[in-house]
Length: 114
Image 1 (cartoon, rainbow, N blue to C red):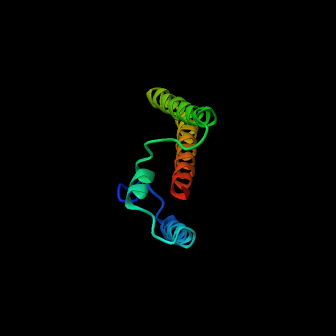
Image 2: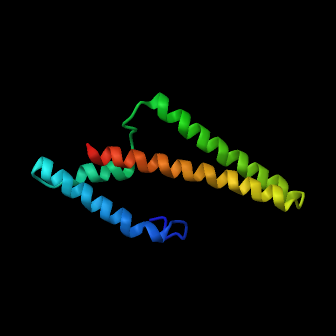
Image 3: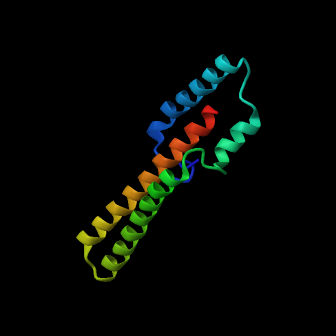
């Protein structure tokens, strides 16, 4: 979905699709049937967190905080025409974003495994 919006990594689509197909096949072998559509929908919504919330929220909080700090640094640096500082802020912003993507992927894998 992110690729359609121009923010994803198209070079990873095939690998991720094959991994997803493998997960569905592994479920079918273990359960003897396909995963119910409701479980797939639940995993895509990520309405709940399936791991210890204390451990997860610290990681989420740090990632969001990095994004906010990076964004603020970019804004301040752009106002002052400090290009090197803006670049450092962008680096911090996108590092936080990548961490959130990793956490999201980890949650999705755990929900699919159920």
